[in-house]
Image (cartoon, rainbow, N blue to C red; front, top):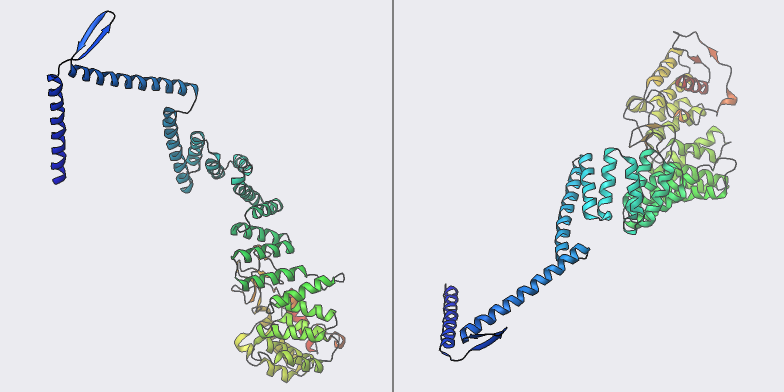
Length: 497
């Protein structure tokens, strides 16, 4: 209120001063005399002031018009002016609007609309670093792979967008199934951005598929340094890769380096069953049975497994059955109630022909966790104790229809693998094989070689010519032998059939 009153008073004061000045000029004598072309003009004091004001305004207007004329000429000549900047701002605004509309169309799955908007934005903005990516993705959505590829190649030529271009071409090669080219592009992309997590994952997957274990270990280390991988997971996966490098240590041409890789894999992850078994065999090859025993005991503490028992048996391959039972105490006293421990003890006693002890070793496994291996062992025990052929055949029939027990199962696609590997043979995922009971019933055993691993072959020298019974029907052919080993062999042949 007071401010408004003050402004009114100032306005009235200014008007009053102007009126007073005009009155003063009118009362003043004299004036200004101007001669133009022989004509004299006499102006009074007030008229002189007004004429001066008009002259100043005219000069100002003249210079403004002159500036406008010069700006127009510059605009027509192509120079940057206020007028050109106005049109540029207008065009830029329309270009950004088209770019925003294209991004929205791309997000909503409208490929053709996105392509149209991208082309419009490209013309209006003339900023390829902004519009080329939208053009490429819109072209991919509409199925125009050639245009998308050409646009990605344009992005590669600029340092600021090189990574985006390489990554885009890499994804195209992956979609085409060209894994080799995609792997090389992934390596280039990772060289540009070493901490890019998605590129690290893609490259690691491609390297494991190509069995480039050394490269995969380097990429895995990069993931650890970038902080995208917990150290415990890194150590296990690094062990898997080291184990993959040493995969052929049992071959005749195995090198010392391969044996060292197996030992390193076990050091990185002592509970990794394949690494423990392979490292133990590497130590056996070096003539170090104590080191092999220590490795296998530590792995058995983490998880009893048939492969560990096989490797433990290989430490002294020519021992007698009684000696083997005694030596296996180092394993069987660890987790004595575990199903695998019981099965191993039963097998060992069957080999030693101590069938009552084998039955005691099995305990209630057949009733509570019965699988094909347990039923086959029961058939061998019954045969060894002199049970009737009908009882033996009954156990073998149960073995044929029973679950096969734990196997190597991919946790990603749940496919059953015949043996462990770093990569799933079905879905190609890395480090997803786990020793577990399949969730779905199997038609055929994926672990046929694991059935009675300590019996098959151990009694070959003691076997006799089998007696062949008349089959109950044409689908159920069973051979009855006097030795428990032949019973086990017969079950394995029927399972493979």
